[in-house]
Structures are given as structure tokens and as C-alpha cells.
Length: 439
Image (cartoon, rainbow, N blue to C red; front, side, top):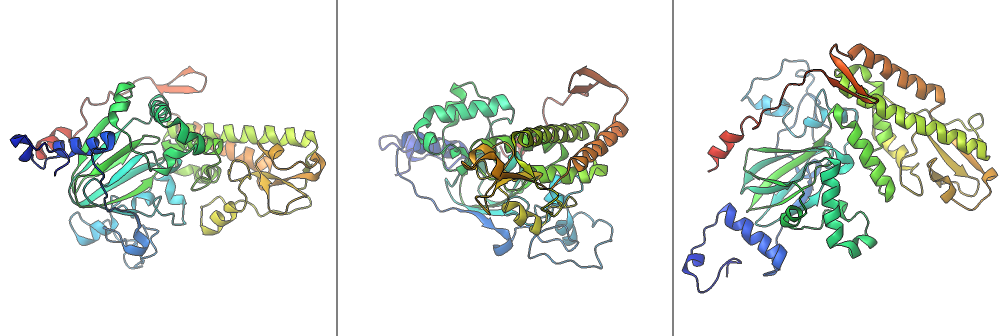
């Protein structure tokens, strides 16, 4: 029998295969366990190995291992819309979007599956993507290539709303989360939007049809399911305003020792190295705020540890300088070897080590957890000297001043706003047309 069917109801026997009815049946199965359902789902399929749904760039706009560069096309004008080359080279091609001119991830030259190399998704009826937000609180973009619609649910990425969702999640799964603190990051638990509505958490839904993109914003929780066989593709990206969200994600990961997919500190300083690319005062100021926060903590902790008796071996051990022009495969491999033993943070600027171990290192926050040896046996390894950190901050500070527009009004310490802000439209362009198309 159909999961929503009642034997004695002629009306239910002729129940239509509509999105509304499928949505009702799906949550009946999830909430009430009205029946056991097994589905087949080809999720997180590596597009490097099995191919993307988009054609690959011939101008070096993709990190895909399958892509080739045609030197004769690299400097040609942008191809015309509708041509075969257009779909290869457009920045809307998910293989290319992480490398768009204003994307922070264009500095990440190593391919990371699902981050800057798209994943493919081969769905069937009721295949589910459980509640989650993106790695490092990145943006994501999902394209529906072909097939039945996908039902999406989303919660805004504000701290209040994201924390509200997690509070609801913990209240229903407190015992399980005691054993697995980062359960939400495992993307294995689905729960009803009704629970969020009852807790006054704002929640929105949309139906994604083939040929449509869905974009999720930093820290915004989302989940959903497929209404039949379909093919989708997704990748992450980051605009310059992402930097503050990346900082929040970094702190969260450290709180339960979850390794990040890349070093936030490395990417922040790589952005600073390319500060001339910053065109917005607001975003440049966000970058400066993050740099000053990180450098201030770094220098305070260095002084504290040295005062406690930790030795500075800078003159004895010559460490390779951090590469700041890009994040390549060698850089990523090197970062993997200097994870803090306690919080799994990449010790990018400096690390504490002890004579008792040739492999274990600690970030400056957690050196007291490293071992029980006397402090005299510990030493500080420094990759980024104080002068380098300060000069980087100053370069970004100077660039900020050149971008500061007339009309900015100081509201208070650490906050600035334009004197006049253009109001946003009540309804996003295209929404009414989209609703009409899919009646």
C-alpha cells in the first residue's frame, strides 16, 4: 500500500503523486515511523573520478583533474551565451565557481572534494540530505541537472537562529550528543520542521526543479529530500564577506577537536597577501578585524608562554616560512603535520613542542594539556615572526583607508555603516515568475 493510503477511503486510493502529498508522506514516515523504507542514494560522488554534469573549462578555470588547458583559448574574449564554449567557461559552471575573480577559494589550488571540486548526487524517491551547515561555514551552490524536484528546508544563518536549531536538536538527542558532540556535522540525523516551528525558529522551504540553482549562506542550516529520481551537483564558494563566518566555524571546530577542511589562519593571511584584490571597504575591514584579533591573541600567548619558561628556539631551529601566495598541495600536507594534539587546529604561526615527543605539537592555547613534563622541556617553534604579522596587518590597514568611502558614519567602536542604505526589495526578483512557472 501507498504509505499515506487508508483502505476504506476511495479518495485516498486515488491519491495524486503531487509534491504536497509526497511531502506529507515523507514526514509521516520520519515522524511516525509508519513504515520502514529503504532508498538508494548515490551521494558525495567524486566528479574528478566519475565526471561532472557540466563540461570542463579549457581555460584553466577548474581544479578538476580531468580538465585540460587549451593555450589558444586562454586569452580569448568571453564566449557568447548559448554556445558550447559558454557552458564550459561561464562562472555559473560549478567546476568554475570556486575560482571566480571575487571568490576567496580561488587561492586554494589543491582540489578538495565537495569544497572546490563538485560532488554529484544521484537521488531517488525520499533520498535525504539531513540537517547540516557547510564545512567552515562556507557558501554552497547546488544545481539540479535532471529529474524529479527536491524539497529544501532552511534556517537563516544568524547566530540566534543557528543556535536555536542546535538547541532544539540537543533537546531531542541529548543522550546521543553526549557521546558524539559534533553529531550535526555527521549529516545523519533528520528531524521535522514542525519541531523548529514549535520552538519559534524561522524556517523556510522551497521546491527545486531541474535547471535551477539553490544557494545556501554561511552557517545556514538546511536539509531536505528528493521526490523521485534526479541528478544534482554541488560545490562551495566564499565571497570576501565570509571571513567572519569562517572565524566562527574555526572556533567551533576547536571546541570539540574537529579538524577543519583547510587552515582558516592560512586562508586569512593568503587573503591579506592579495589585499589589492579587495574592492569593498566593508569586506576589507572584516579582514582587518580578523587579522588583528588573530595577531593580538598570538602575541599575547607567545609572551605568556615565554614568561612561564617555554624556550624560544628560533635561532636554533630554522623553520620554512609560511607560503602566503596560495594554498597548494604541499602547503596542505605540511599543515596536516602541525595539528594541535588537543583541538586539531592547524598551528600556522607557531606551535609548542616538548623534548618528550618528536611528533606531537600544541597550539599556544593548549600546551598545558600536551604532557606532564616540566615547562623547561618545552619550546616554541615560530613560522611567522612578530614583524611579519605586524607588517601584514599594517598593509591591510593602509588598504582599508584607501577604500573608505565618503558618507561612512561611525556608530560605535568596531561598527561603521553607510549614512544612507538602499532598501532591499520585499520580494526577490524572479520569485513571482518562478511560482507561476511551477503551478
